[in-house]
Structure formats: structure tokens, C-alpha cells
Amino acid sequence: MTGEVDMATADTMVQTALREPAERITLDLRAVTFFDSAAIHAVVRLGQRFPGALTVLPSRQVSRVLEIAGLGDQEWLGPT
Image (cartoon, rainbow, N blue to C red; front, side, top):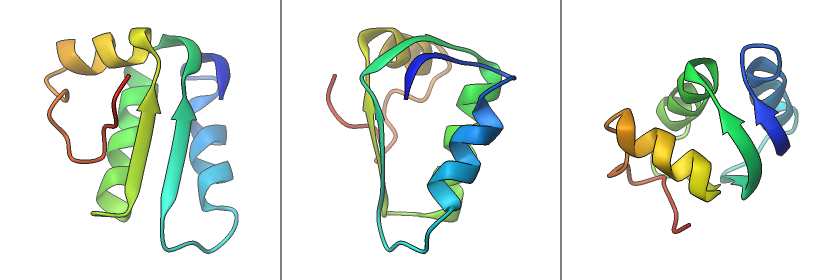
């Protein structure tokens, strides 16, 4: 994903991640510049759907938002 992940694009991110059957999901968010509550909710939903099989590669902005939301210690969160 690049640019903004918000209420207009978060569902598309989820649907894209679910498009093909997979044992592991990696969300590359290193080029994301804006990440809102809808995006947080989408990532949490994916984490619940794929426990132990989701990896999120965050940008600094995404990492900061997840930290503020209290999600900075999630097992699916990779390094910035």
C-alpha cells in the first residue's frame, strides 16, 4: 500500500489481502503516509483472522499511530 489508508481505502486493503487463499499474509505499509482508525480496525480484523500468520511492515507514521492506539506490541507488527 502507498499513500493514505483511511475509511475510503481500508476495506479495499482487506479485500485485496483476502483475494487469494494464503497461509501467511504480509501487509507492506512502509510507503503509507496516513493511517486512520478505519485502517487500524482493518489491520486488527486481519490479525484476528490470521492469528500468528499476519506480518505488518509499517512506515514510521503507521508505527506511530499503532503505538498511540496501544497496538505497538502486537505480534503481527514488524520493525519500522
